[in-house]
Every structure is written in C-alpha cells, then in structure tokens.
Length: 156
Image (tube, rainbow, N blue to C red; front, side, top):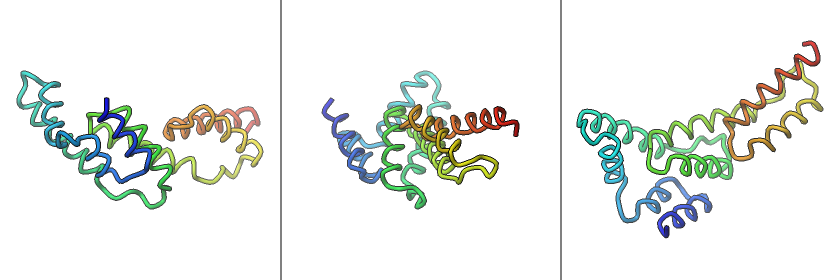
C-alpha cells in the first residue's frame, strides 16, 4: 500500500517516468518485476516467458524515451497516470496506452474542421471533454463521432 502511494505522489508531482518507475519499484527493479509478471502469465511455457520479457523490455524502453515536446507536462502527467493505473505491471501495454493517448491528444488539439462553425465545434468539444476528462483517446473518438453527427444533422 505504501509503495502504491509513493508511486501516485511521484506521478502527480509530474516527475519523469524514470523516477516514477524508481518510485514504483523502490524495492524491486523493473527487470525483476518483468520476470515475475512473465513467469506468472506463462508458468509452464518458457518460450512465451522469453517472448513476454522481450516485449516488456521494449515497452519499458519506449516509456523511457523523451516526452513528445508538443504535449504539455500537465497533459503528459495526466495520460501517464491514467496508463500507469490501467497497466501497473505491464510496461508493453502501458507504452501502447501512452502512444494511443498521445495520438488522441494530438487529434483533439487539431483545429476545427473547415465545414463546421465554431459554435457547433465548441459544443462538441465541451461535451467530449466532460464525457472523457482523463482519456484523450476516447475524447478524440467522441469528437469524431460528434462531428459526424453534426454533419449529418446539418446535411453536409
């Protein structure tokens, strides 16, 4: 329980991922966590354990990569916390989650479509932000679907 609280404090403080990982695994290194996870997931399949370890190591390396400079540190901290909470012991899935969140964030930061007036776009953006305050991927999906619906209603 204490270790989990330390992780959350590190993440909420917006510290780097390497520090967040160090906070989470203060007692065990990431390699040990990965090996334990893969042994638990594939107890009687050593080939899959090796594959799992390789995939987890790739995910960990991806998480250690520099942050996308187009994303604010606040937004990056928000998406990082979301992905860490969803995938606390799965570096591969956490890296995938972060990639999807970054793509969603980039999409919602794009300008409004040219065929849509600013009032409709503002209503749509507000709706999707309320629906998905902490999930940029789902907010982008919501935005796409709402824009599609506005176009249908407006006969465009």
